[in-house]
Length: 499
Image 1 (tube, one colour):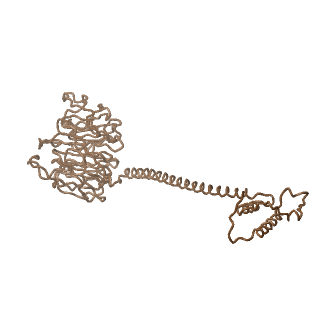
Image 2 (tube, rainbow, N blue to C red):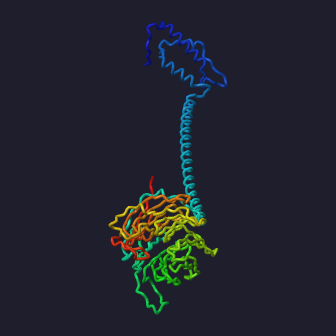
Image 3 (cartoon, rainbow, N blue to C red):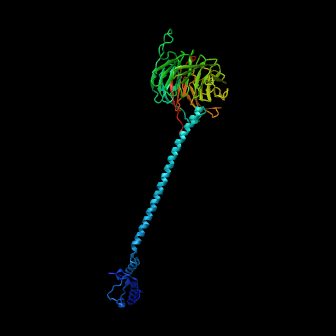
């Protein structure tokens, strides 16, 4: 039963009832129900019915009055507004959901845009890498490529000490895929090594000396000191030269003998392939340079000019080679197509080793201990460092006192088309150098010490390895012997700084 709370200062009951009834009758006048509509006319109740007051009628509470008012407001012209309110609430909820979906959609679009930009950046990096490679190839073809990498290297670490030769190791070469190294020795053998493991993979043994009466008999191997070795850039041919004036051609993969090249009248002191070809240059103590075509296994021509036995030779991309003339004190650049050569002078002693940095620059070493940097456009050196290995400390009890004080430069190597160089001496010291961009100075980087003659040095093409051939004796003679040295092949790992 409805109830209400009466206030203490409320009006009399009869008066309040009259006001309430009056307000209800006023509202009833405004009400229009569907049942009262008949033929488009509105039927009105009699005045008497309006004025009748039921004594037993209950007085609604304030809450009941509010509910009635709310229901009256919700009903207008036969339409219920409550449904509209509910629809409006649903519309508001839909709007909120739409806003949430729009925000989510925008977030997804933003993430997709970022992902797309990152992919484009990766593609740009790949494209930049390809562009850089193509640019380097063009510069390399022109002989003008020069990368600055020397400062990125940390101190070399001795990875393997490979023993297998019975006498001094005289020459070293590394395959272009940076997997294998080949070494020659005074014991007349060739060994194929694995750069990664340091294991011996194949041994080409010494052969017995053939009968001198049959000079044209096939000779499958070496019976005298091997002084030079090299491998073609595609890894197909391995060539080796010895003191018996012969050049042997081998299959680099199987180490099977292919051909014996004859023609030189003196010891073979150097062998070098023209890059990306089977064109072979050979130098000899007969003071000549010979050109060979290994595709047809034929001799091409002979170049003359040096006045003393040639000690070393090197070649790169162009159809030309450079030679070190030893006691004649000259370097010569042989231009095959032009049928001419250039002569360079500047060392005071015998020039015993030479290495091309690129097709326009080279480095040379002499028995007076000096190292020189050259440009092919100038006849005098751009820089000459005297007694380059003098400042290295050695144990006098290990090195014979009869050795000269000038610290003879016995080997040189360059990481092609970069500023990284290496030099070796008879005191067992290997220096790593950085050449300046102008090739007018050498900066020392690292010093590696061991005992013995450093007869040859080679960098792998990727710059990850440095291989040294060590012996008790110099590769070209037996003037001195370091008995405490070990005849070995040293493989150094060259790591780059992570900073």
